[in-house]
Image (cartoon, rainbow, N blue to C red; front, side, top):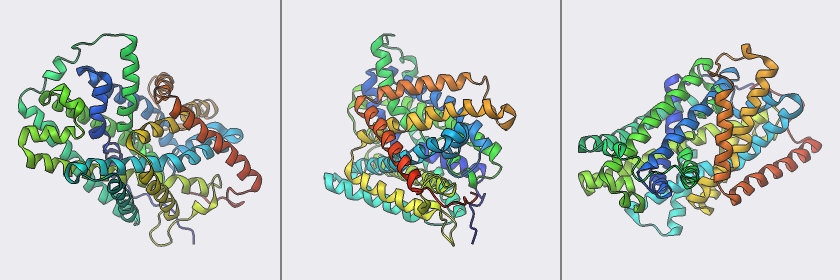
Length: 446
């Protein structure tokens, strides 16, 4: 029985999936951290820097995604970009690091969820871990269904995300002091080496909050009219989220003193409570937990397609190559990634996970993919691509430079961890190739 993925996701679905992936627990838990690192009202610059890098990097994803709209996204981009000689190795390394990095992303949302739930429950460390693990299990159960049902769930969650963000933003606007943080953004600002270093460290956190704009590429085999809808959904998502993040940060800074922003573990809840009282603070906390859950849902959905796509292409272990016979989704991939994420959610803390996520994926996925695009353009010509980035290759080269700086800003420990994962992947690849573990002789079409 030849079961295939079905193109059932519209531009609305794709945009909703991207945006709920982007707005997870990240902007709520790192807002205080970013302000603390920057040390002044100019912490808004770190959120602007995250948006700029997202736009630049989305041009790379758009050009590749529109030309290669298949399940697995980066797997295909790397394989095609690096050609016959190196493509299989690069695509394998991507899937290999995804088997670790994707569960870290899922775990980060679950851990963030359980930590923010402390606003109500004051969990012990063990209780926090029980909650984070239970959230992962719940998401896996919700994703165990047909893609069109998931599209509808995504739109519902998207509405919840937008409602939460707009309430937070309009609270600041109606408070009457909304423009003050913008007017005072440069108070105490000095362009020195220390500022550049702080911006780098803070941008690690803000970029984590923007990640997910490319989720649609992992679902490329299920998107309607992908050559247009994949780029559109990414740029709509980044524009919308950048506006929401900046407006939210400005709103919070227009109400709370800077010292409160830096010190509060639940800064957005404290902000709403200051405006409307304790009951409103509790309601917004519930909505933030809904947003965190929505992000976990979208991230797990997108990542579950990557090992499946690689296995179908006989470039990863054949175990992952099957779709559910009735529900038509990669159930083995979903269950394995979910299982690893469950374990990670029990073992790690949020700060460690955020830094590890970026350090692990920058070299292969972001920098490697951008270089792969240059190689593919050289080999195939610009006519191969239905969507072309403006001023090519300038945005791509700038993005590579920024990614290198972000990689360094994750710190030596995380850099070494990322390089270790790649080194282990190289060993596994050569063993798997020699032992012929990477699928059957005949590859099935995705």
